[in-house]
Image (cartoon, rainbow, N blue to C red; front, side, top):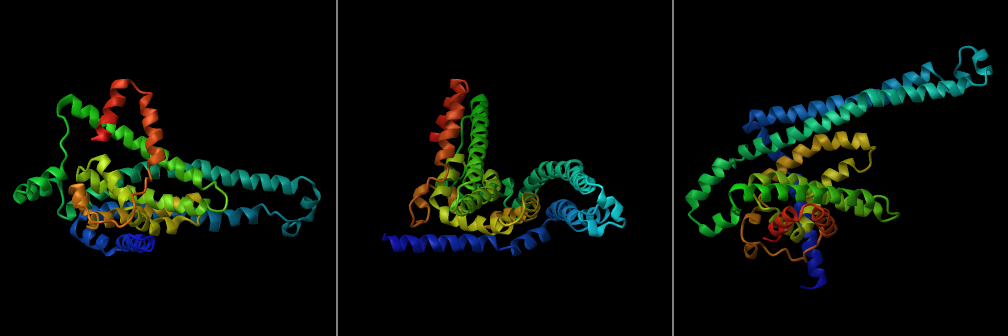
Length: 331
């Protein structure tokens, strides 16, 4: 395929990803089907929107202006000019304002930030689980559908059975450890690219889009029991689609301060998790690789650096565990 054809195909997949991410009507339909999903989603909005972002709004709009009124920064704002004649008054007021604002962050925002991360992480999993069930794709439903299908190739592709017993448990743990390391290293890559002059922001935006897209679909792939190597292979094969899917979420948070960005992301992320759960654009991940639709673009090794660093870190573990993870990854 010519370069122009590949560019057109990449652009088409990118736009398809954006379209899938913006299908927010799925969220409404799923919440109408599940009261538990509606409750969890509402709790996310209450904690991260009303309480967290609301607290930031109160600080910026009420607390800080009040401190500037009580502890003015200019002599013209003093009721008595005698205070201004004292050389250290303005410096003392400035120090006191800064100390009180930092006290608000230390005693309220940072604990609330940590509490929100922990609780939201639990809720995101619940939201994905309830959304998955509301789609009629609970594990029981999937297994019934598979047994009625009587198609050996589809069943074998959908569930890749690993060793049973202690060996299977060790492989599962090793795979989870590798996955956590991989995504942690990739997150560090995302952070590092933001420090590159000129083109750093653009690369950072692209990597963030992939990261959020992977997180959104990871819940669905976990419930579908898709093997880690298959996820990474599919993700890197259809990289334009996932870059498009993650773009709306990143665009909404890219131009705000870190705390505000987190609050907005914490509200939007469960919505994109649900749109990913309802998406069928990547359903062929459950099929054999030769049955995947033609991407029309070359595979992009997005996780190459993260993979190499993660495997190097795992190699520092006892040899048996490291070999189990490596063998599982190569299956």
